[in-house]
Length: 452
Image (cartoon, rainbow, N blue to C red; front, side, top):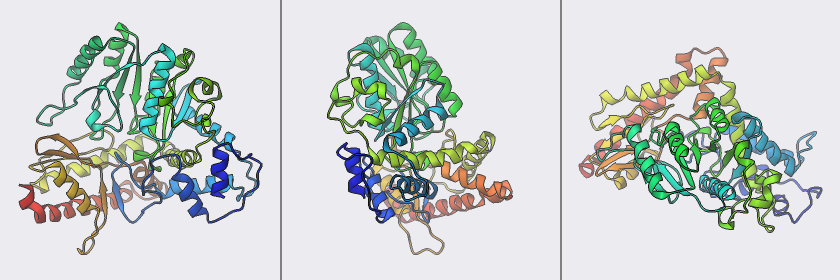
């Protein structure tokens, strides 16, 4: 079965060919891992605790179940299924466009954040006929940003820089680089900071030809804000993994109609080498796809089908309740600071991101700490915890991202919908937070001589 679907993906088998059902879970694992860099996180791990939603995490149970259901429809295992492969991809792009963009928004699917950035570079080339010079801020706290003129978000002591300083430095860099420009506006870094502001990018664009890419891969910005970005002529980059709880290697570039109307130059092949024809709207394919490009990336479609199911749950939760849950998560993390003297500080990031700032510890030691937290010990009541990958802020100063995810918010909201009070609905997460810090205390004390 999986070989047949992969053959369809490559365009070597007609959509009407018959299939023979197999083990749905095994087929899904094989297909979902294709056409991307998924790694080992194919299936949910509901008995492990995932505070790592600024980095790759195991898919949520809800997302994985939705992916399986999509595969069943593609295999015609479910009653009344009439899902075609091309219609499936058209539907995925339309769901994303409808959720985040105004009418006319074009959606380009990508098997990684890095390849989605390359698609943004391809858009800039298709408009200007030459490569854009790139300016960014926060590359050290972002994902796969590539080679750009990058501006640090922090001072040497790890404190966040003022937005006006970052904007001024970006403007000076833009003047040195010339044009055309591609400006990477980081909406939320892995530690919850923002990069160049939208106003800062607009100031640069008022001086010289520049396209703005809003990096919303943290998925902590409201759809209304991203809709406004697209109306203002900015591209938007999103991700179905990390915060949303989908499988890794699912990204998308949203392009406003005003930019789509300006495409005129065929783009270099190296910017679209991971792009399949149905990742793009039909009218984009002549400029962006080589004739030998594959038609479909089945794995990418399954990964986005899974992520969008979790996104639907998140969007069906009222925005004030979503914010209240994320704010409570942050406050519960901040409340732990007074109890543990080995934490230098806990930053209050945005939308449920609260990184722990640890001093007197190297990046390698922080990585060891993270691995210890993800290893089950003999201590009664212990659990496996996954935190975000450590960020080096300065000499012996490390940020360890600790963040809430959409599946966490959705589970709390579901309990409230069943009549449970807000406090009781959040109680399982609070217990997890308390157990996490108790485990960190044990690990820290055990390894204290090597940390100091």
